[in-house]
Length: 190
Image 1 (cartoon, rainbow, N blue to C red):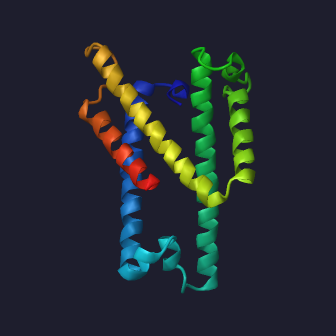
Image 2: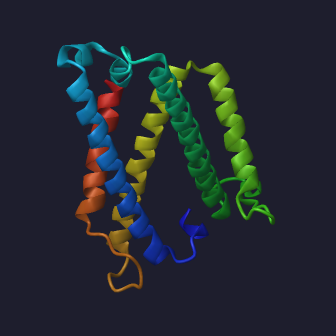
């Protein structure tokens, strides 16, 4: 996505930092709300702890929660489509996948063939794999991608000279990223 930004050197680090801070604060607020409303023994045995918050709520609140869940799910799918299509596009543009996946629409300036392949793959998977397993696999794939992105950043930092005109991240950040992503991936596989 950085290739689509006007000034990625300045915009992306700021956008990533803001996104991490906002999502972390929202996550902490949701966890705090759940912990205040639902007893710990009920949380520890539930496969859907957030739904316990709304179990005794009025029907209109439950409907609103369901609507938010649907919108969040659709948003997650769209993000996966964007991310995966950009990965396919980047690999095809570098000659690592068939060149047709590097096709860019002249109207939208987005990778149309890569996006079509990802959409078709998601449609097929949604019909062939149970949704709860598919969600788990998706999370594991994203963690795997995070591991490889952080490993790539470590490799780039080792091979690049330090005085370039680009955003420079301390080495401990991608090392910590690999460790955290690997730990999360390992716990999801257990």
